[in-house]
Image (cartoon, rainbow, N blue to C red; front, top):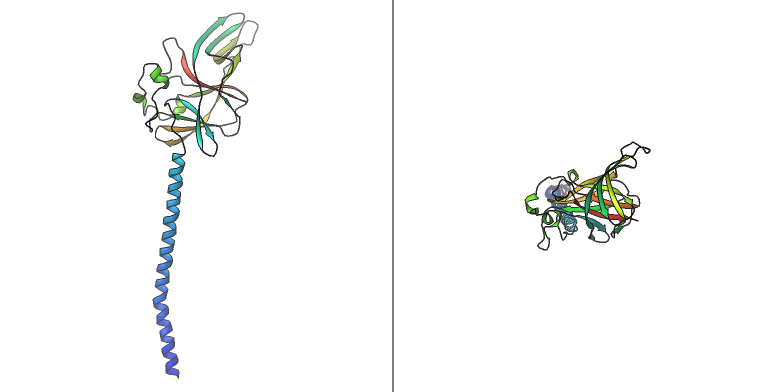
Length: 237
């Protein structure tokens, strides 16, 4: 009887010796499959996220990024800002740019997260190389890769409404009876989020108050012989 008990115990022990590594192997295989599955999900999510950003019709322009269930782009008011200089001892002096019309036809809702899109490359056959550069006799493709940081050439101004026009004041001083303090139009900073090569999301750093705004692209071949340059304007309600 004792002999049979010893034999049974030995068989149980041997079974455990063979089953333990097999169980460990199965567990490791399941863990590995889980890691591969999660990695696949993350990769697909990354690709989907990158593809969620639409390609604008024109490169070298600023577009509003509308974030609903899916992303879409709204083209801003493209206008030529005329250089303006006024010097008057009594009334004061002004130097800046004037945009026709007292308000932009493109209206946006204010909020804590307003974003825009700027591209320099054509990743879609439907994209058109234009905009400010082609209109001024320049080849936009020659600018590809020029300046990896759009914030060095693009500035967002809160423009001043003056009668029937909007103005970007680079310098304004009161006259003999006015304030001698130099005044300029308010600038709003933005953070850059690189989506892919030549494609950026411009995230405004703080909420925009109600008013009129314009992206100025001075120094990017956006000017002409008269000193005017292209701006992309919008209003916040």
